[in-house]
Image (cartoon, rainbow, N blue to C red):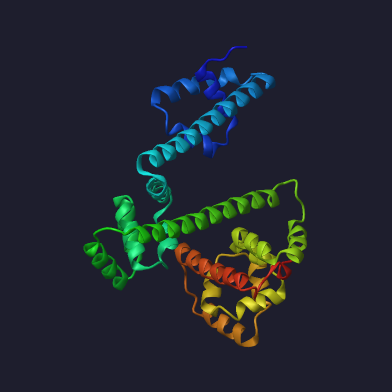
Length: 327
């Protein structure tokens, strides 16, 4: 079976996951995308051996392109050495690579949310922050700039106004810091992706008693277990917390917030909380009942988020763990 280039491309896109295929489609024209989508239905019955052939062809082509890039890189170094001498050639080659790497890092920063960039650079020195803001997209740097307090904003403006150029050692330092923060972001992104996979596994209809699985994981890796709980825990999950765990939570949250957060919950949920209150807590809780106030859904949700945030903070500090959650 002979497939055309467009058919092979469509087949590869069908094999890829949604996230990857979506990225590939951004490089195609509307006309090319239309052609590919029209081919989808007729490619669904392609035999497995043909699919394997197409994948093999793609891998071979990818390896050839990569080899060609390596050759071009080596040739560039040889040309620079011949024209400028050994030391000057190597130095210029390193500068070219450094600039290329810097531009790739900036391109990566432009592809991630502004809040993520702020979190990555907020603890770096003012010079570094200012240079990064000067190189990223206008919409992004405006938003990132707004996250800083007024004092830092003032310092950033002063640094940008004074900026002229970077010396070689400063460029190397800048490049190293960029490499480090981007590596950390990729690591964090990968960790979050892995946690999503774990969440889907544990929520599968084929997996029963996932709390027992988490307790087994806890024996070997407490951090992983708490990260999974932090990612998955909802307000409704409070029902699964043991009585001793509920008592710990009640010590950390005021009774008005507790009362409003469970205002629209059923009797079972409310009893779970009330039965674990101390005498003093119960008196404060009853005072809120006696006020006979009505609370809007927005306010109830807001208070639930406060309770949830506090529980997650306790999980983070290991004041609560999977051992406080019933099977």
